[in-house]
Length: 114
Image 1: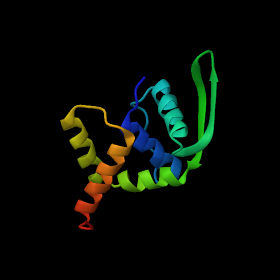
Image 2: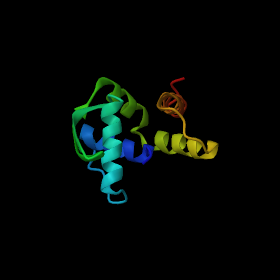
Image 3: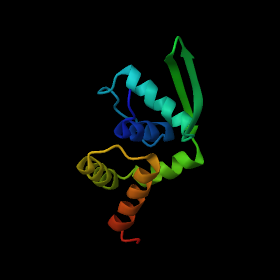
Image 4: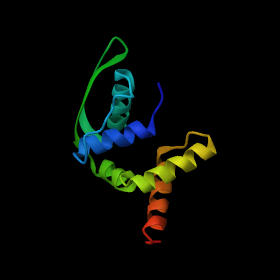
């Protein structure tokens, strides 16, 4: 299973209450795995139930300070689409911190804040 940044963004938006995300294009396993990643990275608060080397259930109860910061960087569709486009052009998986910094840089450019 791999991290899916589009799904991560949707889960953050959903957990923050910003919008009800449509997750129908993702399997239960993908959703559970990426929810667990949010807990592991301390972007969200919640609980994870595991058994027999698999994730059984993950409940996200809210975003942490870092989760809110990251969501602030990627919530805007223009910012996220440009960030995602650059990531796809590079063709490599980048660390979370690089993705966050890239999104912040793009937001600064788009909103003429830099």
